[in-house]
Image 1 (cartoon, rainbow, N blue to C red):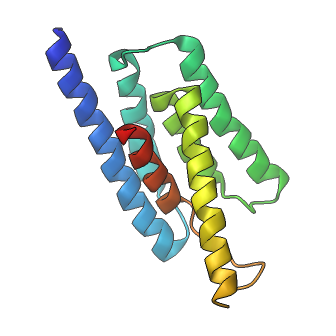
Image 2: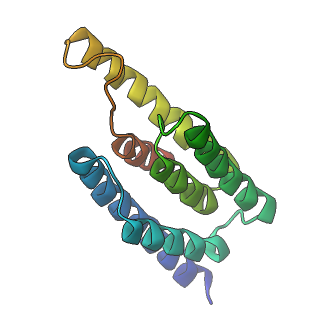
Length: 148
């Protein structure tokens, strides 16, 4: 496969991942849950990106997956204070982006959520126990990560 065609497939898959994250973010805002079907499609798309990445490395891919598995572990340890679905999405993103970009994605999304939580508290729209959807922040972080 020529490099130009490979690049077109790569960009198309990354755009499809972004659209799926956007749709999942909207569902997360409305229902506070993520569809298993969406998660499965996301995993398939993220796995399809692996051979098309320019900087492909198995350790980078496994490292990104490990970051998501750690998020799932934190979810279990905190009794779902962080949703398992969010951890699964982070694992999928780690497969597609690799370890460094996945860490950057999680940092960016977490920072956005901190700002959102402060706004919610200052405007007295919620309290300490208010749960905020994380997927919209992951989508925004994904956009910043891909554009960067």
